[in-house]
Image: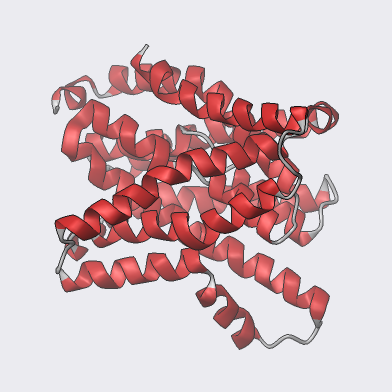
Length: 317
């Protein structure tokens, strides 16, 4: 019941956005304005805050990066090839769809879930999972920038593409967060309160924009694809991450954290970037919505499995 109470508000905000879109009480440009606000202000704030407040040495756990990030990267590559060859997606569309099936909402779902179960011990793995998602977003942004540059000029130099990626506020905030963590300075109370306040606004703004963009007609028309990618996100990806963590010999707490981080709904940042680059934003929004709804049941299932495999780890809190 506690998990349901945690995830249900996420889907409720999405429904609120859809209701306002359906009633046409707000203009169609509402979603664009919300996306710009999230991409340039809210997401950079939460990325910089979560990463920058940690000690740099706490960000180094190679087994976790290999089992969680490595597995998701391989799964992305497989999905990308399948979407291009079987579904005949273009590069940009295949990139968005594949990342929607692997990139998790670690900051707003995995972090509170792990913190609720394990206390402060569960926060650090969630932050590292968030860093992995940031790296995945860096790769996604690189591809989308390349596609955008190709449309504008087929001979866009690679260094310009790289510079455009670094100019992306989400990527820049992530890199600055890692650099600031290395200094070990930390944040004053006033700065922490400021960044915390901005980060708290992300959930409502981004989820409302997702709901506002969602089209029931499109969901029905693309149902099989959305269902397939949702099952990959909520069942196959966590299973592969759990297997990889077990084979590597990762600590039980970190194994649980890696699995849960891969089992939470799709990161809404995927939708925001898809909208920003005009690459399948509706498909991304529908996958976020579907994974948010179905994860209420699948998260409980994974917690049951993990509790059965590592019962002593759940006594850490």
